[in-house]
Image (cartoon, rainbow, N blue to C red; front, top):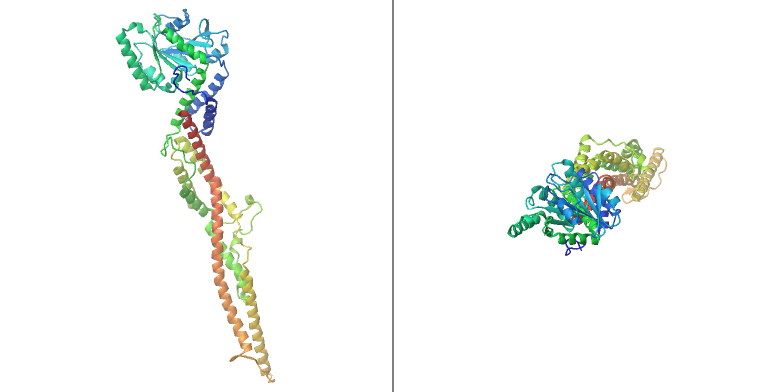
Length: 542
C-alpha cells in the first residue's frame, strides 16, 4: 500500500512492464508526435533506469514551496538543529541542501540529483534523504529552474504552504495540479499555523482542501504544522519515517510519472477527428477506398488494352485452326496483338520483364494519386495531424514505384496465349475432311467431263437420291465447310471474350496484390502502429 495513502492500491507491481510498454509506445510513435512530448517521455525512461540503479534503499523527500512558506525552518526543525539558513532576506535558499540519515552518505544519488551541499543526520529513519529546495516562485530564474528540475526527480514531494500564500495560483496551477497523478507520493503541510487562531485555522484548512480537490489531490493529507512552536512535527516525522521505511517511494514516484507521461502522450495522439480515446483504433483501410485505388491502378497499368489484345490474339489464333483451309494462311499476315505489346510469354524474372504498353497518361497517373490520397485521408482521420501527414507523405511517395512495377507485373502474368482449345483441332479436322470431299467431288466431275469431251463411254454415276454423288460431294463439302467456318468464327469470338475476361480478372488480381503490397500494406502497418501506441498509452494512463 502507499506509504502516504495507505488505503490506496499498490501501483508498483507492474512498473517494469509499464516502463517497457511506454518504450514500445514511443517506438511506435517515433517521429510522429511533438518533440517536447517525446523528449519528456524519453527523459522519464532514462531517469527511471538511472534511479532504479541508484541507492535502491534510499528515499528522497523534498520540501517545496513558495517564498516565505518556511521550508528552511521546517527543514531545521525536522533535522533537530539549524543547518539551513533562515532569514528575512528572500530568497534565502539558493542551492539545494540535503540531510542524510544512515551510514551511507548517498553520494552517488545526490550527485545524480545535483545536490552539492550535504549534512549528516542522526536519530531519524535509516535511508532517508531530506532536501530543502529553492523557492518555486523565486525572483531568481536559476532558483526556479533548480526547484522545477528537482521536483521531477525526487521520490516524495512535501509541499510546504503558509496561511498567506496557500492559495497562490503559481503553486496550484503550475505545480500541484500537473502532479495530480502523484498523490501517492505527495504530502501537503500547512506551516505557520501558530499565526492563526483555531477558527481561522479551520477555515484555511477547509479552503485548502477545496483547492486541492480542484487540483485533483483531494485525497492527499494536509498536516497543520508550526516549525517555530513544534506543532504537528511529530506527525510529520512519523509520516516521513513511514515513507522511508517502505523503501518503495521511488517506485511509486516512477509509477506516477509513467501515468502522467502516458496521459500527455494520449493527449498528443488524440487530436484526430475520428473515434474516441477509449475506442480501439482501426487498423484496416476501407474496402471501398482500396477498390477505387485498384481500379485506378488497373487503368494506369493498361488492363483494358491487354484484355482487348488478348481477345484479338485469340481470334487470330483460332482463325489459323478453324478458318476455311484455303484461306487460313491469310490469318498469318495479321500481327499478333499480344506479341506487338511484348506480352504472352512470361519472363523468368518478373523484375526484368517489360511490355510495349503505352505508359499511363497524366490523367491516369493523377487518378492513381487521387485515389491513394483519398484512401489515406479516409483511413487516418483518427490520427493526430503530424502523424497523419507523415503517413500521407509515405504512402503517396510510393505511387511512382507502384505505377512502374505494374508494367512488370502485367508482363509476368499468364495470358493463356499458348493454350489451344481441343475443339479447334476437331473442327479443323472436319473442315479438312469436307474440303477433301469437295475436292474429290470436283475431281470426279472433272473426270466425267473429260470423258464426255473425249466421247468415251461414260461410266454409271452413283446417285444420292436425285443428285449424283460427285455433285453432292462438291456442293456438300463446300457448303458444310463454309458453315463450319462460320460456326468456328462465332465460337472463336465467344471463346475470345471468355479468355479476355479471365485474363482481365487475373490482371486485376495481380494489380490488386501489387497495390496491397506496396500501398495498402504500408498504410495498414502505420495504422497498426498507431493502434498499438494508443492501446499502450491508454492502458498506462488509466
